[in-house]
Length: 105
Image (cartoon, rainbow, N blue to C red; front, side):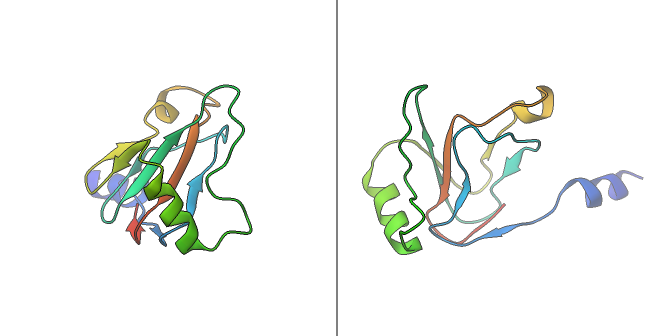
């Protein structure tokens, strides 16, 4: 029975380097676990409307920009994020999550 729950509750999702997993103020309903690769979470303040990944940028440019910021929290294998989404209805993100290498969530 537990194996059935685990098989439906956890799915692997590949994310290519330079792709944004979520942006600021997106409503989120699940917790994310990094199984391989690395991501960077860039917190954005209440009045900060900037984005790290404008639509016209190539993924390689986005990775370089995210790495050069030297800010935010780096998430590697075995790290997790978005835990409040499990406990708070209509919880929304407070920043951006960008993949800085090919990653599996």
